[in-house]
Image (tube, rainbow, N blue to C red; front, side, top):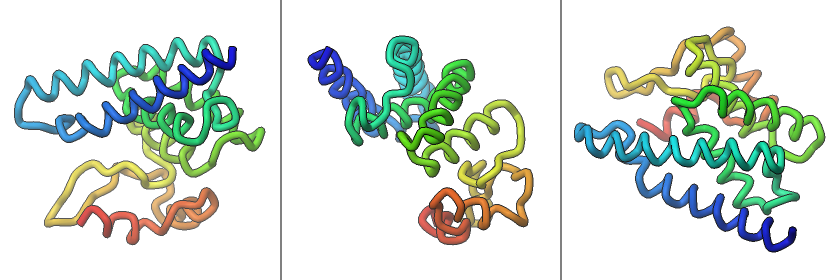
Length: 166
């Protein structure tokens, strides 16, 4: 079992590294690059589904901090696999309740899943595009409370967050 967990941790971190290397292709003008990105994230999403079925949410306690963050990244980018995102969200919520995962990453996954479902986000973490050089978030359920809700889960105020994209 220990060998399996070590191998799982390596696999998850390798998936995140591949994600980071190819993420620039997500919105490429080249359809072949976009397709390669979609194939990669679909493959990773499928594998995360298998991992969750076998182990539950891969927490830092189970696979280490880096691999747990990698699992979150894979779930975050499984945009065309809502079943995977919803399952990850459910398992991650349980992990956060048990103190085994962080509320910050959960908030990002919560928003990402809601946006992919065509719903308004809660924390304002998902950016729809850029207008006049400024990032524009997807619509939020309670825009007047976004900074308060973000603070509760350890995310910087919205204006500070988007300043990094400008």
